[in-house]
Image 1 (cartoon, helix red, strand yellow):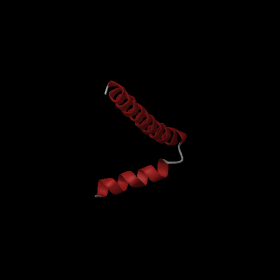
Image 2 (cartoon, rainbow, N blue to C red):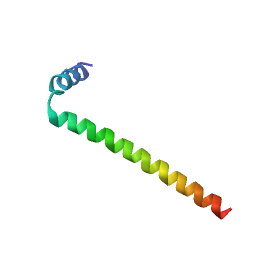
Image 3 (cartoon, rainbow, N blue to C red):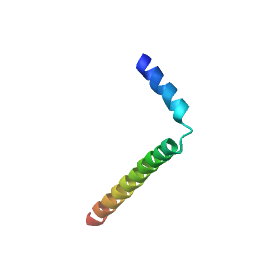
Image 4 (cartoon, one colour):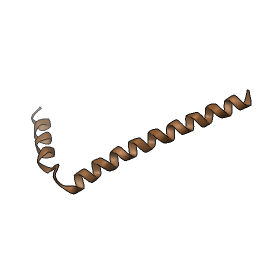
Length: 53
């Protein structure tokens, strides 16, 4: 528990650094892009199955 508290305190202290905010923004963007690609892939697969039937 002490390690978690220390990690959160360090994160809060260093949040003002531009590098950390850039890393967090890129992580969010990557997750969103992965979700979009997965959705488009599923739609394409279902469309192909519908045409084949």
